Amino acid sequence: MTIKNLLKSQYSFNNNDLFEALDNDISTILLRNMETHQFKAGEPIFNEGEKPKGIYKVIQGKVKKFTKTNFGAEHIFYICKENEFLGHHAVLSEEYYPDAAMAIIDSEIQIIPEEDFRKAVDSSHQLSKRLLKNLGHEFGVFINATKMLAKYTVRERTALNLLILEEKYHCDNTDKTEIIINREDLASMVGTAKESVVRMLKDFKEEQLITTQRSSIFIEDYAGLVKVANLL
Image 1 (tube, rainbow, N blue to C red):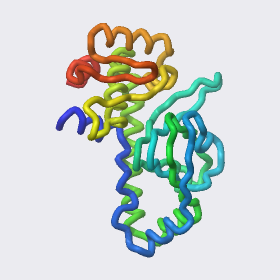
Image 2 (image 1 turned 135 degrees about the horizontal axis):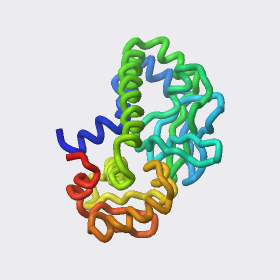
Image 3 (image 1 turned 90 degrees about the vertical axis):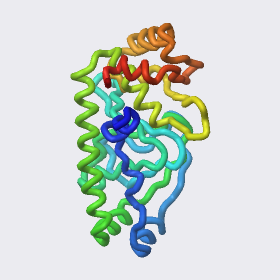
Image 4 (image 1 turned 45 degrees about the vertical axis):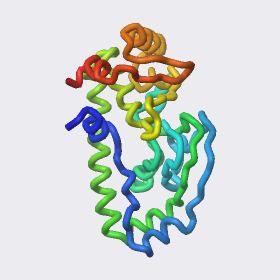
C-alpha cells in the first residue's frame, strides 16, 4: 500500500459514495427538498449543542469539524473535502451535534433536511447497510486521530497533518498542491500551540521540505516529509 493510500484509508472518511446508485425513488426522497448554500471562510455550518436540521455534503471548499474546550480553544479533529458528508451522526443518533462545523475557505454546501434523510434510510436497506459500513470506518478514523496525539511528537504530528492536508487539497490538474490553512487551524489539528507550529514550519522550510506563501503551504519534498512523520 502506498503512503497516499495509507493516509486515505486511515485518516479519511471516504463516504463520498454514500448516495451512489440508489434506487430512483430513494434518490427522489433525498433530492426533492435539497438546498445549496454558499458559506464564506469562517462562517459556521452548524454549532456544537444544536439540534440537527439535516445532513450536509461539501460540493466545493473545505470544512473543519471541531470541538471547543472550556477555555474556548478549538480542537480540529477532521477536515471535510469535496463530496464528503457531515452532520449525519447526530441525525442517526437523534442527539444534538457533539461538534461544530465551519468553512475553512469559501465553500458550497448541499443540505438535505433531516426528515427526508430519515425517510430514505428507513426505506432503503442498501443505504442503511452503506451507512453502517461508513460509520464503522469513521470510528476507526477517529481512533487513528486520537492515537496520533499519543504516539507522535509535535514535529511528527506537524509533518503527518501536512501529508493528510495534501490529500485533502490535492487537485489533479495542478503540479503542486496548495494547502490553504491558517496557522491557528493547523496548530489545532496538530494539538499544540501556534508558536510551536510556526517553529516547525520554519524548520521544514530550512530543510527544504516545504515552501510557504502567506497562509498557503506547498510540499516540496514529499518523501522527506513522510520520513519526518515516521511513516516509513
